Image 1 (tube, rainbow, N blue to C red):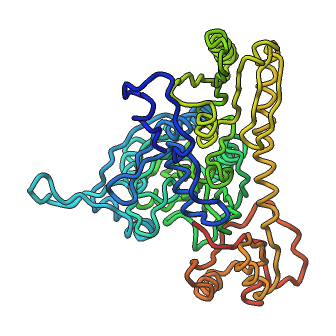
Image 2 (cartoon, rainbow, N blue to C red):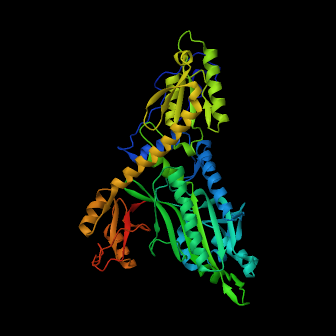
Image 3 (cartoon, rainbow, N blue to C red):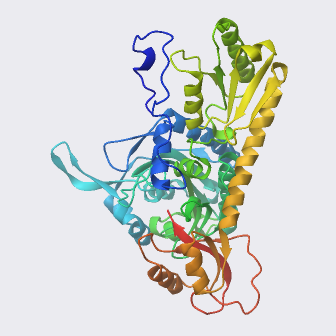
Length: 509
């Protein structure tokens, strides 16, 4: 959103009291229910989260997005440090022969790998890949560092960027050619420890989505076809976007088994003096999480931020009417900001004089700030403030003396309300089915399909082939850990064979 830099003297030397007229392009041109794709692009740009870049699929992340990422990082970093993870940074580049060591792994990533082939005008002796993920970058060195059972477990995490040269529908945060993430890589002496950590990390990812971003997710296991290339098994948290009827993978926690240990010769001497092969995990979440939050909570006025991740939780706006004591009003606003900041609440004051209060309301609504506080002459006289909620627009006047307590309470209420509302919408889309006809009807109806399945890869391939179309094919999203009862004799919806589990199916991002 242009903040109309030249308007009314914002850095343009105009008259102090000049106010911007109503038609300042602050409103949204698209509605969420009418044109979701255009609405989404408009929200992320107008709320000043991203700016489009001149290379397709690459985006500039502005402070409004980066501060959300930092808040998530602060939580996650503290939690993994409790699990004794250590920070590392490995190089961005990887040689071709190392990248291709694990065949299944590189086949899964090959179409997305970007290569450096020149230095200045000279061709490089051998092309160098830019990491799409860091297994092959790190594991030759794990092999060097691990000698004995005393060197285990080895637990490393890095916060970095990766490049995957996506060609299909780049979308800010959701599908981009470069993105930010954390990637954890851990090495254990046995499978039990590896299995335990997979689920510990998955629970942290659930907490990021549900407790911070207020997005409901399902924890589950990926099918053999959808698991991480070269891994033993993959677990994930899966979100769902009701407006588009698409699932979206929120984060993944993989048990790699011993496959990479074989390829990179990562062995250790166990307590009996014998050589053993290690067990490994890798796990990651990305800036995609921010996009999922935007899609879930945003509305026709713009972004709606859950308080826990809002860079500004409370915006305070002075409302000086004609002949009002502007100095006293500004003083009350500054005092409120100070009081809230001292209490650990992220509050800010919008004291710009070249914009009307109404214009400011629209801008901060666009940016999704959870609470707006208005202070005018009447509020000053009554020793109160007016508080307006972003999530539902309700207004309430509260005594200035109760400010911190009431703001805290409201921020908690908003956080819970956003999650509950999103969960109700998501749950209303879950369609348990038992036959192919019900499946295709539910798919066309943009549902999150829960279907009895025989867990055979050929059947999943067949479902993909039979549902291919303009909107994309259906696939398994995950097999939820929380399994409904599967009565004896239940058959697979697609093959008619005996079903072994319930799985979520649908189209996905």
